[in-house]
Image (tube, rainbow, N blue to C red):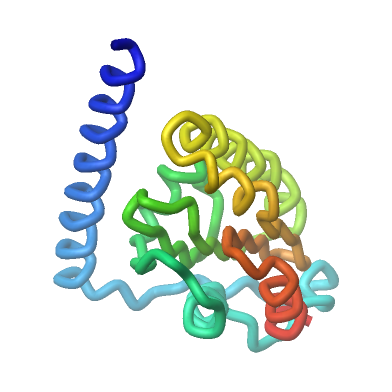
Length: 176
């Protein structure tokens, strides 16, 4: 009985998250946000290509990797809520329907130090996902255990997919 209640609550939360995502997508489509802040050239950002862009990297990962679920681009506010990150200059977060744990997140920070501090928030998100999926979709734990979390200068990338090796190779290519 307790398990059924938990599943109903999880289903309600999933529906609410989906509705919130749909509203956010509709609002952002009308809003036309163009202003991405570009950090100045600094010693901290020399390791990362000057052409790197969180939105473009997320898009390239979504196109190059194979996913079971259909991933949807979340707006920056939703991305911040999911990961608890509010210091990112820009982000690109693709999330699934909730039927799988698959997702992509790329964050750009103003400083490398801010980026390092955000790694713990990303790791906590993955742990929370493991706990959430453990009881009703245990096969997703394998995906979550293979999560790629990489920091490259001011960029932090997360990829939950079946082909972690390919995700790492692509990230190395896009960010170095």
